[in-house]
Image (cartoon, rainbow, N blue to C red; front, side, top):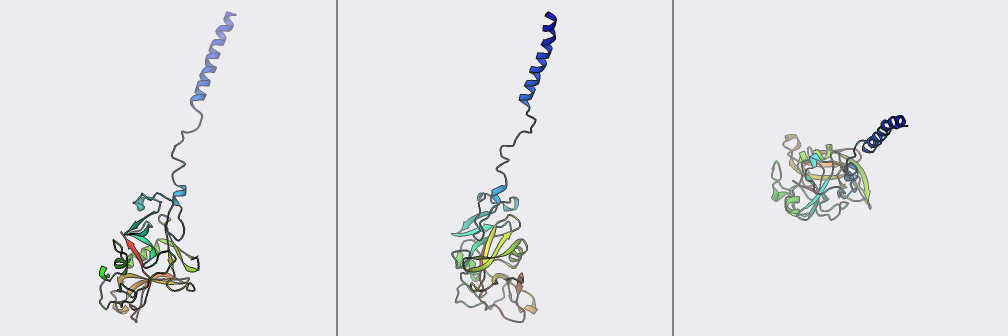
Length: 238
């Protein structure tokens, strides 16, 4: 009997040791308690409005995939991860799908006439976004408009009865909606920039965004004075 006890004791000790090891190590890696809340729904964007469901407190869009929104002087903007923030509505509009007011280049009222001066960039007193929106708002430059064209995905979209384009950032997923510049039957639009061409062949004409089913690009008129054309304006701020 004594021999049996002596034989069983080591076995009992080994079983208990194995049991304790199994309780301390489940065989799985420790779970990160934040793993389920990182990413995911923070990238969602409500089409057309520029509003986001992400963290609106993050102002460094270049290092985040979450689009940021806010206001400047009472007007809403969305950060598309580009060099400037874009207004969610046209100048003179109260909803993204509204065309709003249209201006000749260099005019700050809808009845005003275009400027005959040749500034490389419109001064703020001739900038319809700066004058009508106030604060830090201004018209986009040619470079900023080209940045919008080349860094976003453009998709035709109808909101209500208005045709337009959802412009979705390839950087952070944020979006704005650009309605056509004319009426609900139109399929394209034109938006002024504040930049003037310095090439003599273009007769020093301003650059504008031109978009439609055939192309989306920043252009300038040639052999014609188009400063008197009335185009929409979408403000930007920094």
